[in-house]
Length: 80
Image (spheres, rainbow, N blue to C red):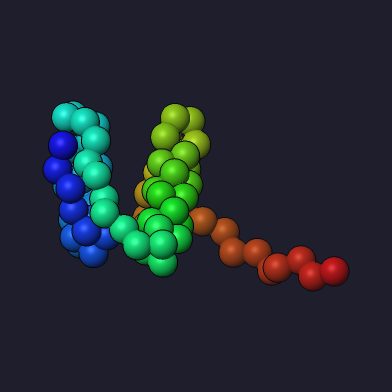
């Protein structure tokens, strides 16, 4: 099981995520301050994964493709 610093993980996070999906965990050595940053990073990944998976992800990718093709309508914001 490899051990890396938080900075190395940040620079290569996609690689480490791919490795975790296929080969197991990676240990990230962190200080207390870095731990807070790591928790924030994990929460961001969980949020991204949730948005991009399943029916949500399919709908989001379809909507983004439509917007890129100019297939959208602009609306005024509703203010209370």
